[in-house]
Length: 290
Image 1 (cartoon, helix red, strand yellow):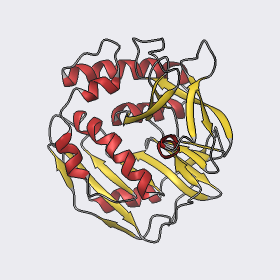
Image 2: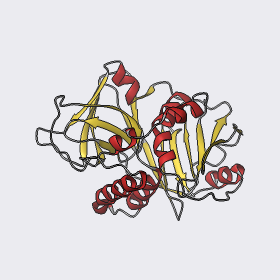
Image 3: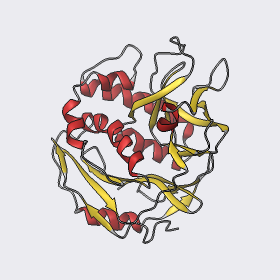
Image 4: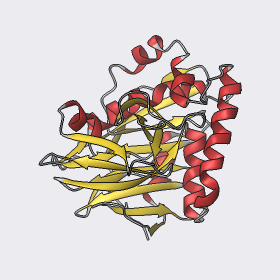
């Protein structure tokens, strides 16, 4: 089914951000309405209204519990990291969690060499996300229901990423690997970006990512810029015009997928690996690799 159709019709593109072989094209969507009840995990965490913890005393690598103590709906983004507890994890998919409730959400470990607490037993928000290449593979694995091998793939990709950036972490911690790099100039390049999303070229397959909320989009951009820059292609490539990716995105076909929380989830069909969520029939978040 076509879930977008004309959803992203009135679009403007901001100036391209060039970082070596990486290109970021911010996207603005006119009159795009966000449901203000939906707030990021980071926002609620900062205000003491959300927390995350292991599902029980023993813990389960593939699951964590997120607790929403607020009157809002909590949003956590596909590939977003949560750090602490027994090991750092990333969200398997985008999820919307009901107010005043807790939900067990599927995750993947991004710190293979640790399984034990370091003081605080709860998780904290993070400042990084999964690399584009790994997230694309994850979307493909989930689409083919190959969840058993996904964690091994994530670990292998982090190991290869560590070799690529020439930094080794004692616990194979993706966050530590990213923190080893000088990133101040990267944040300067995106500090003035205020958009609904972006087309990203030069990190493997081109991809588009769009959020209904510009504030959540900005936070995700800041979490992602380090890993995008570190995972850029080694040689420059020629890409299509931005309009062509928007057209393909609008016309893409999707299948209904499993929902974890209140979201309606979808997975892209064919060779375009991606995921999308809606709430109350309103668009919230999507990404797709072309």
